[in-house]
Length: 251
Image (cartoon, rainbow, N blue to C red; front, side):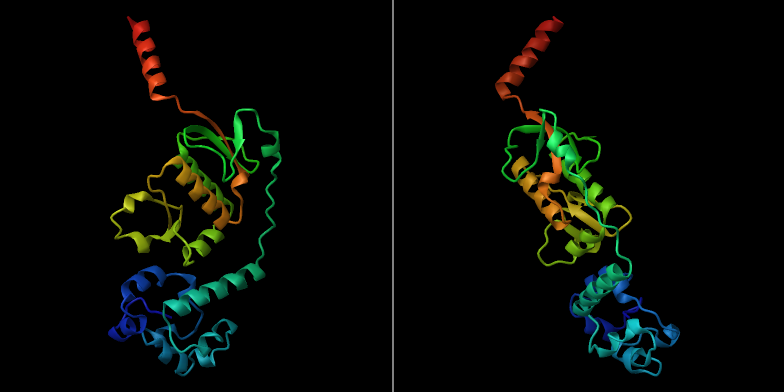
């Protein structure tokens, strides 16, 4: 609907944020439809495409029937159509029910802990994690756990990530066009084969656990689906003693 080349009238139709809207939505499904008259429609305004001969109002394609009822084509209608297409898709092609078994977290070795919101991790160093019943994975720190879990969930089902990115109540997952001008661009991690990215800014352990919980909730899971292997960080005094002992042994 929104053409690849925007005229001045199209920019006015989209509003003062027209460039951001264009970059974010141009090649997404919400802005695409089927028609045998694409060359005639060209870069006409949405209202012209709707009302012209063989336009959306006269289209025999069911997918275009809702387009014929719209007065404008802007960010609001794009978001609404994306939700509509998503709902149609999951009804037409329902994915198999995913019911990860949690047997593993009930048979944890003594040095593994199931994550909960009230778990104390302030001075804890993490060395490995596992999610659902998947094999354990090595992790060098809590940030690495967060990124690796996000990639695990993405591989399981990317749909919730797109839903979260288009939600107003979201501070974790973004379209890259939204943050390309952000001076903290390096604090985002791109998700594979997509235009989505997750925020991975520096955080203390407690704040990181909170973000991990939000990520699990946003993707339809629970923080307790993750278990970790961790140990208490040695105090500064102990680290100094260990360092001195190591030096003494080398003498």
